[in-house]
Amino acid sequence: GSWCLPDKYLEENYCRNPDGDPRPWCFTTSSTKRWDFCSIPRCGEGIAYRGTVAVTESGKTCQSWSSQTPHKHNRTPDNYPCKGLDNNYCRNPDNERQPWCYTTDPETRWEYCSVPKCSNASGPSDEAVIPPDEEDCYEGDGSSYRGVTSETISGKKCQAWSSMSPHVHQKTPQTFPNA
Image 1 (cartoon, rainbow, N blue to C red):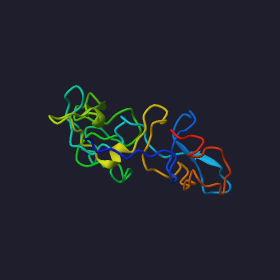
Image 2: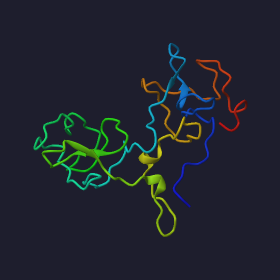
Image 3: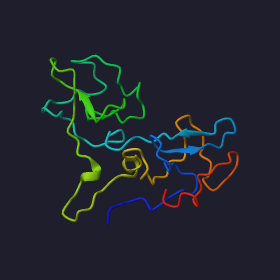
């Protein structure tokens, strides 16, 4: 079968969305911050894409991220160190809707790239090979998210769902068995 995350509901301290919030969240271990949304990207935005596509949707060749010609820009490997801005590969360093690049065409500053979405990949054996970092994302409101991120967008560690410390709450594995 496909490489998938095991079924994890309100276990440990993983980010979840048991109650229809806009995205996965958790109670934090900070006594001053009761809960917060988690730092998980939405699926399909290609934030974690690290493939080697270097051509835009209209077929233009990508400009190297470290180059300033023909287009001057600040999306450089130095300014965005963890975004995989290698060579001229399509990337999504700034939360656009999909990977993109500056083009080598002086008339066209940038364009989106046609990057295959991992979740729809199907080979002869119908097995999608999804690297772990590409899998840890959420779809829709994240109510189906079963990944293992356990940190909020403000950098706080998540409190275990079964714990009542530091925050007492009703969102337990018992009250939300399918969340």
